[in-house]
Structures are given as structure tokens and as C-alpha cells.
Image 1 (tube, protein in one colour):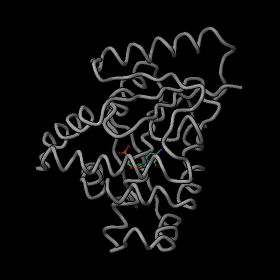
Image 2 (cartoon, helix red, strand yellow):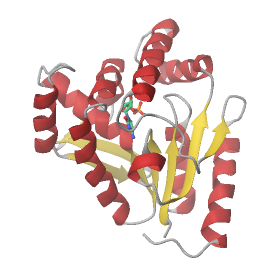
Image 3 (cartoon, helix red, strand yellow):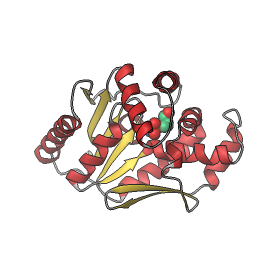
Length: 230
Ligand code: DC
């Protein structure tokens, strides 16, 4: 039985967040930003003085941490133990630590339950790296977004500058390349398209065009098949 879940995966900067938010809004589904969960843990790990090699402490910390994704007027707020970290988790050093943290199997296991609980509460658009392969293998729609490293780095650089984070394009590209490599080659839940995912190359498409393409697929799947379960 297919789930009422749209799983959108792909590497950093492929456009997942912007697309997922718009698709969620159009379908009236809830938006699940799974990367924000790993970033939230990385933010707390940095604050606690933990390093990537402190895996067992990071696992203990994960068990004791309450991460909340709240939606206000179409905007997502991320809370860690009640503290709003929405902006703080977008910092490049948080992204850099989120990647090794996401390779710790016990951390993924804990977050797996969390993500599935979220989707049990209603129609969900989930974005991340393994939402179509591991978290929601029965998702009604699976999308994998791609674009070249240069284009993705340019987009992420622009985004960071808009947030007031001053960093060179070259540094963004180097960080992104290292992160992609780590995320794609890890043993557990590596970044890769699910066999039944629709792959969309966003290199030369506008946000509107990608959203329309995804919505077209959703309409076809969610109306032509038996009604999906939640
Ligand atoms: O999408 P993002 O940049 O916010 O993700 C931050 C890190 O979290 C990224 O390096 C990979 C990891 N991640 C993951 O392993 N699985 C997910 N479903 C989402 C993110």
C-alpha cells in the first residue's frame, strides 16, 4: 500500500527545500525537512564541544535531545530543546558537522522513528537524502533532484549571502564536494535515487518549472491509483 508521502531526495543545492515547501503548500501536506534534524543535532554537538569522532557521546546526546519542526504561516521553525535554532543551523560549520553525524547508524535509527511518526500524522512532503530509499520505501511519489556541482554551489552561495553569511564561492564548492562524497559513499543510507524515483535534472529549469513537474507526477499518482493510506 502506497503512503501519502512525496519523497524528494538529492544532493545539497539541487533545490530540494524550495521545491518541497512549494509542493507541500500546493497539496496541503506537511513539510518534513529531514536535513534540519541532522543539522539540529550538529548545532547542539558544536555547542556541547563534541567532535565528529565522539560518536558514542553524539548518540547519547541524540537520545536526550528534543527536536521540533513547527510550521508558522508556511515558514518552518526548528527548535532544539525549546530553543529556536532556525537560522543558526544554516551556518556552513553546522552543515559540515551534520554530514559525519548523519553517517552514525544509531543516530539514523533514532531519527528514522521520528520521521515515520511525523508522516503518520498526515500527508507529508519529505526532503533529504534517503527519504525514498530508506525512510519511506512505500512513498506514493519519489523524486530525485540533481544539478551539476557548479550550479549547486552557485545556488547555495547565493542563499548564504542572502542570509548574511560571508563565504567565498570556492569554499562553498569545496565544502559541498566533500559533503556529497561523504553522503554518497557512507555504508548506511547513502545518497542515491530509489529505483522507482523520477530523476529531474534542475540545471536549466526554474523553480516554477520543477514544482509544476513534481505536482504533475503527484496528481497522476494520487488520483489514478487506489487512495494512498496515511
Ligand atoms: O539537506 P541538508 O544540507 O540540510 O542536510 C544536512 C546533512 O544531513 C547532509 O550532509 C546529509 C545529511 N542528511 C542525511 O544524511 N539524510 C537525510 N535524509 C537528510 C540529510
